[in-house]
Image (cartoon, rainbow, N blue to C red; front, top):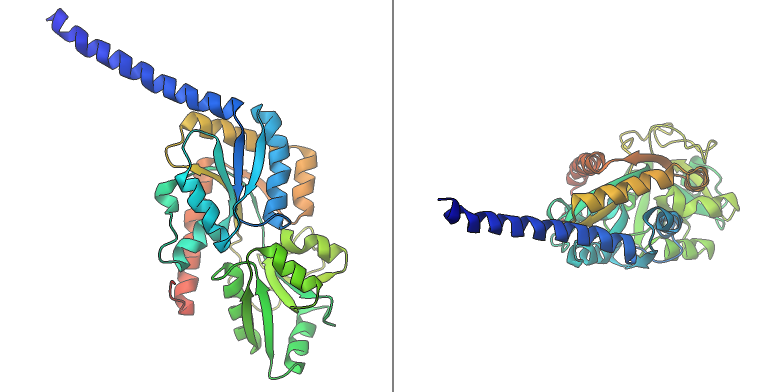
Length: 328
């Protein structure tokens, strides 16, 4: 009887050793091999700048090179598909905000990925708000002045740039138009950088995007942020009123930034990367840099980030449905 059980015990031992070796191998590769941090938008935009700020510090925490790889296009959809296709070995991560993770699956019938099954949350590190900014070519210095200026341009028609089609900024353009009885049309771009280039060239008179996308040019006086979303004024923009103050309530649930890994990535790798993110955003210089970019910095564990993503998606599912938008 003892002899007959030996093969089974040996088999279990071999299997256990193999699993341990696989986990250790994945962790070792994450520690010694180059780590790619995917970004779904072009260089020069707010998300790219945030990713490079973190990557520069993460390399010291992880003891390996961390490079930012831009897979721009389709509102982050290309980068998300690349994450899904990546091996779950701890060498590929995805830094994204709410649009790709929470919104795209609501507005695109076949995005090529399912966050609930294809990704695993690693760490959240900030929240932010979307804002309306006007270009230097308009005389408006406030929301009311912008509304009056649009009305003076002919039947209240205006075009507002947004960094991606079927995004939260695009839905906000519709809501703003309805609120002020303006015929506003969203002009989708492939990221905030090309949208900003057109605003700086006065080829488009206004844009809706995140604070990090506008903050530097706002401080330089090249564009003017006239209203912000969220439940309170932003520390980086204390003189800019919220939309709620202006009478447009209902958008207090603010977007988030997080880091994700391919499904199947080991808990050991996820925990180590998550802990590294927590340490990096606690550094005074990193926190100051992200705060000046318009972010509210705060660590979210993998479980907290997953819950945040699900709650945000549910909120916007109701808003999108009420708008009558049909998934494309």
